[in-house]
Image (cartoon, rainbow, N blue to C red; front, side, top):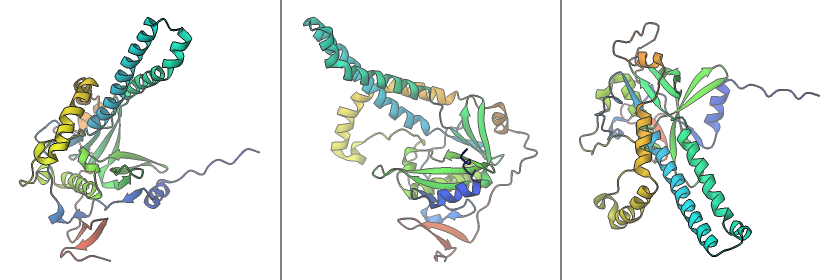
Length: 326
């Protein structure tokens, strides 16, 4: 007897499953703004190729991929060097080849596995997202010449909690692509966006304000030091991080970074990100004076009397006077 096929879930059913999942949390709709006194941005937006009033582009993936490549390339180089030295010493002492294999096969195999893992990471397609303000669209890069485009007004924002112990909270943007399918895009622009729920909420407000009001609405707070948003780890300083962390970074982490080929990895990934081949239609929609006939380019405005406010663990909906609703 042929087993009956699994029922196909609708987009609404998949969305409900995410809302009920223990490691997912539904965030406020983009028609609700963050409580104004909690909003503070610290992003340097001076790079006009990534931040302008037509679109802005997230390249947080570069730093994340670079960190994974530091580890795999470093592990490959270290184990490969030790393997060569060990095998050479064994050969010089005239050991039997079977004994040489039995002594060194695990280290050599690990080195080979790290090589192929690093090679696979180099070949991964980058995860890049463009927020097209002038067309009110979100473009999700898939591969050279191919991208998925969704309506900003239909976004469903979520936080995804990492496995226990990792402490990472990722801002995820869910879009309907068909009655039975969805697309998921990362909302992070900076490594710090994934440190806490309040960081997810602040980045969501950053996106909401940009798409509604433009670049002028997301300028850095004058009281904060502005840094270009990036997926790379911030530089460790004696003033901010203390003596122990500073010495550890300079005496251990920095030499390991260079030995693993860090500068070359960074250069390759940054050049690759700058040369992404977006589809021609995406480039046209993001260009000055683009023909946007057929698109609803009306910005999504937030409710004037309802806000969400971070409460230390989650968020509350509040009225214009700060009173919790419901």
